[in-house]
Image 1 (cartoon, rainbow, N blue to C red):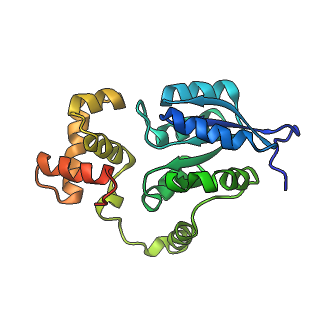
Image 2 (image 1 turned 45 degrees about the vertical axis):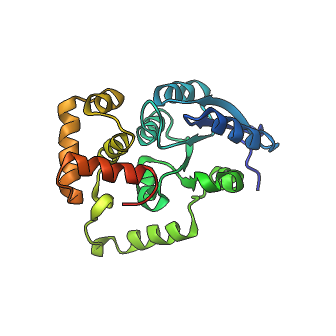
Image 3 (image 1 turned 90 degrees about the vertical axis):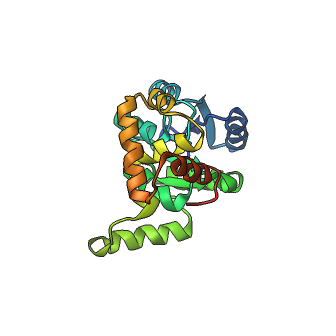
Length: 224
C-alpha cells in the first residue's frame, strides 16, 4: 500500500529533535524513500511549532526531551493546529512509561531511539496508512489496560507522576535548579517547588538530596 500523500506526491515529514546529528540521520533515511521527503526540521518546541504551522507536514517525528520546551506539549499544540497531522514519537525514554501519555496527547506511535534506525521507515509507513506503531509488548499492555480499565488499580511509583511532574523530574536529573527549571518550563519557581513536593510524596523520597539522586539515576537510564 502506498504511503504517498493524497495528492500523489511524496508524503511530507517533519523532524523535531534537539540533536543535529540525529535530525540529519533521520533525514538521510527518510529521503532515501521515493514516497517520503523531509520538509522541515527543528530543535526546540517553539521552532517546531512554527515549522509545523508553516509546513503543514503529513507526519511529524517528535522527541519527548527538547533543550527548550517539551515534546508532549508540542504534540498537543500540533494537534490543536492541525488535527489531521500524524505524529510518531522517537525518544530515549521508556516506552512502557510514556506510551499511554503520547497516545493521550495525540501521537500514533513510539520508537525507542536505540531501535530508530531499523524501525524508522516501518513506523512512518504504518502511521501514514492509518495504523498505530508500538512495540508488541506495549501494544498488549495498552490493550489490556483499555479492556480492563474499570478494574485497573491506581498507578503507583513513577507511573503515578503527571506529565508536568515527569518534566520536572527530568530537569532535576539533568542538574538544573528550581529557577532554571522554572525558566525552561515557563512556570513560577513556586509552582516548580510544589511539583517537587508532589514528586517526593508520590515516590516516598524524604529530602531534596534524595530527589536529585533518584532523578539523576532515572535520567541516566538506571531505572527507578
